[in-house]
Image (cartoon, rainbow, N blue to C red):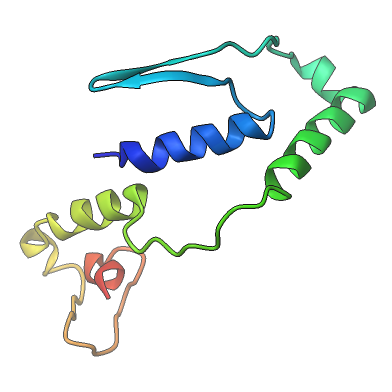
Length: 118
């Protein structure tokens, strides 16, 4: 599950810096947020130097935001990936891979789910 509290804090922070729609209300099963006027660009527009400047300026604004340097050990994508890998049944692959999860050398890290669990 997503951490909705962290998500809302991020939305409020982005909105306060003009990088996201304003958040008007939150309730038990949803939110109400504003609208940012914009349009989808095509490949030719993406090649335009003025558009590239605007994109770079917006990316710089994201990177220059004053954000807390808080380390979160359990980020959602990594946790879900780790949980997925832990559920892989490697018994069928034991004939094809040398699987060592005991701290020994790992023969094929690209295919070895134990590599990702250390």
